Length: 116
Length: 109
Image 1: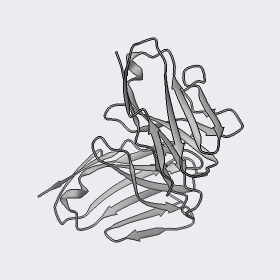
Image 2 (image 1 turned 135 degrees about the vertical axis):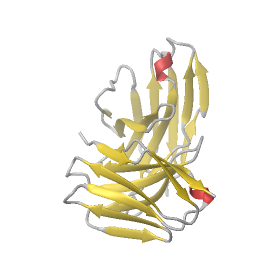
Image 3 (image 1 turned 180 degrees about the vertical axis):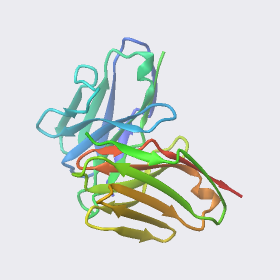
């Protein structure tokens, strides 16, 4: 399956600031996904990032708060803007394995964000 | 959009017994149903998945069944072991994944 490098692994940020999270994949993939996992909860899809077009955001998430870049088929960034303590979560990127027939989804190791 | 319900939220079984976790989904267009295991502080790991054109799939002690008509799918773990203790998530997809709320599986020695 695809190997994803995600960074930073963790960060502590001041409220009102922004943090950009990077994901690098070792193979070209059409779709990359960004998820949020709040403490003790499940994963929620934030947006789908396609190369060459604007990201598609899920209900409850907006581009001004979570701008996403997808400059090529192996890389994407998610920015968490104007942070508040409610943004403290783990953020994960994910790709769909386009080689295996079962189309498994692989996750990065996550970015643990604490906003103080 | 898709909505995935998962039950139970916590499941405690004796080592060696079987565990069953059930999920229902709402969007009939969903065509891929993975199960993930997440240990504390780690990323979710895919343990088994099934596509909508298949009714059952098995991989050693783990099996998944899918009933498209009823829109539900289940995870079955047999001969449970202490290392099976973790949080398990079901998900449904026709693009990105919509996750259930998770089941905390506890294997009692």
